[in-house]
Amino acid sequence: MAFFALFDSKLRAQRKEEEAENSRLEYERTRRLLGLKITFPGDLGSDEIWWRDHFLWLKDVGYQLRPRHAPDWVPSWQGTDKYWGLCEDSWRMHSTQIASATRTSDGARVALKRIQPSLHPYEIEVGRFLASEPLRQRENHCVEMLDVLQVPNEVDETILVLPLLRPFDNPPFETIGEIIDFTLQVFEGLQFMHKHRVAHRDCMNLNIMMDPREMYLHPFHPCRPSRRLDLKGPAKHRSRTECPPRYLFIDFGISRRYQAWQVAPLEPPIWGGYKGVPEFQTSNEPRNPFPTDVWYLGYALQQQLLEVYRGLSFMEPLVSDMLQTDPAKRPTMDEVMSRFVPTYSALSPWKLRSRAVMKEEWIIMRPFRALFHWLRCLGFLWRRLPAIPSLTV
Image 1 (cartoon, rainbow, N blue to C red):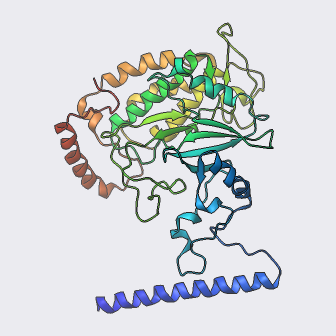
Image 2: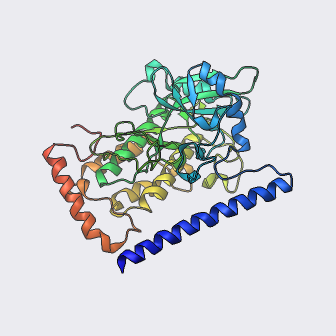
Image 3: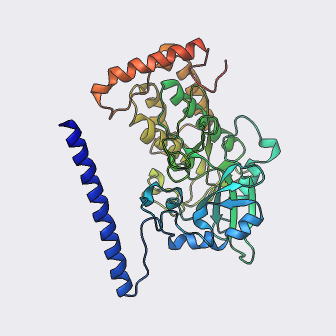
């Protein structure tokens, strides 16, 4: 009976595919009769035309865009029975200003960010300053601009070449020690920026990324990070404990660099940059941007860590102070670091190696996941891997 049921399910699946193809063909015929342009999921979007038009120039200067942006691109699923969603060239980036590419000189995978200097006049200046030789230190957690390309014949179009990164919480954290490692790095990174008189002014969760090159054995797809580059399976990775990643701040579009004498520089709120910050809910008066950075980072930790994972109560008092409504009552990043170090140092090795349990996790699966977790931890202990991955002492 099971055999016939399996056979019947295959027939149903085949019939469903045939119905979908018939619907697609009928849709195509209707569009042609009406004189409309035929578009299907996976086809080149209107916002991608700019990248297609600059494909050959980018190739000449050393950056190879994906096949879908080539001037002579023909979808790999066209004329075949392939489902478009399984083809590498069917997927597009979520942001219209970003494209993924390969640097032809060494095969490195990069992200190309299209900017208009007239709208963000300080982005290149701040990025170059943070990547300058004197600031190349371990505490610097700012993404490095690998190259700056001036688009020919377009005065207000510039392309920033950046390393290809992932969201900082994808894949999810596995241990409390890994969460502490992330928190320590972003605290350290923002403290470093403030020390050098740079205010990020938009250090929300989307502007904190992870450099995962050591974690992933095979390249992941830039549009579907959970899949391999060829989409023929999941992108397998090692844990953060085995291969500690670096967490980086990105997007300096509204960042500012101040002189040493500007003890409390005042900046007005920028549309889209200070959304939700208490001091700008009732007034649009200029404010000191450094306490606003502290609020933004505290809000990111609250939303992406404290409200997602269990067992982080030791972080709550500090994050709560970072979210004080009155900017004058928030700690500086120096104070944040001085409070956080003794906080995590007081935790036991057992706590640091304990599993990072999500609050929405299915309770029935917890015992099995806990067993597998501690078996892995035995291997980490045998290899003498530190509980807080990037700390070697």
